[in-house]
Image (cartoon, rainbow, N blue to C red; front, side):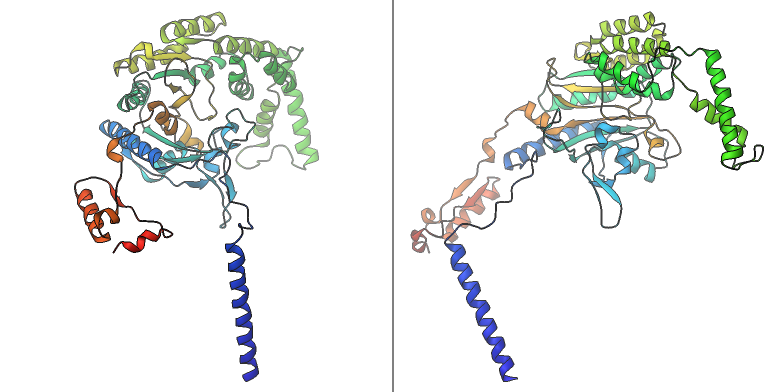
Length: 481
């Protein structure tokens, strides 16, 4: 036992000596590790910026609260499925997603709307109108080569959602509130650019197109607005929407008969299912009819090209509300589409004017493209002025989002959010002399106790104050008692 104890003592001494040597070495040379640096496109936020953000949040909460909006919070981390059900590829490709230890596929929230709708659907049984506001960080990954790759990957959204309210009057309230919030922060030149997904969808429905073809055209409206017609046409050709062959009604009927015969043969021979027996809730005959319809939905190139030409022209229409509405009606009429489809957009603008928004602050852009695909009606972006350099925020109507999230009904809903960092940058510096700190020197006051007492008196009167502690390496510190 004595020898074992001696060995332990020797090991302890050896460990202690090694630690002491390591401490001496490390105190005379730089660290052997590389500094841990901030992630690319993430931002550190200092006291001044945080104070400006807090002040803006307080002001905006007050504006929204007076209109009946109450605060709500949702988790920063959600199941990834919440954001990809109907958000479109542009957002789903920018998620910070990972597999959590419990095995769920989760993501940091890239926006609030889907989570707010999930919260309401799970906790509220009322069919009345619900007004909620929120604020907090959101996360969207951007690669350096992306169009907005130099922007921060984390930013703050502050916004509001109105659930259970139908268009168009509710749309006008939300647009007006977005401008009202900016005015409360001192931004008086705000402008709103309004688009309307519903107008585009309804116009395309006037053509003999499949849902797949309509979705293709809607997803490419941004490219068409930018004049990339040839690129979109090439993609359409590759997907079979544009061909040299014209499929008339007689040929389409013949194709359906041929496809139905093929499917019936596969069911009877290839899969061993005798025709005439029930399969699930549908008979094999119903299955054949449904499959043949889906498989024979070959686009008529003439209809597709007509729809494409209409959308090319409509996507170019933008400008002051009155003139843009007239141009949009002219484009639809020339394409053989009812101009009445634009009436809802006109009513939305009228409702905003009733709320006090002057017409010179409202522009229309029929080619507005948005990376989140759940919008179903009006949508809008907020700008500092007519230059349209960078959006301060935006929103729109998403009546079908609750059903897309798996619930049993559609709920009329709309909302918007500011990019708070962009809004604060538009406000400019708000330095306040009252934020200055009065530093109290123990040496000047005669003792640390006197300095502390003076600092307490200043703080009791609402003035920021702190003790100016001297450096540990300052030999004069020993003179203060």
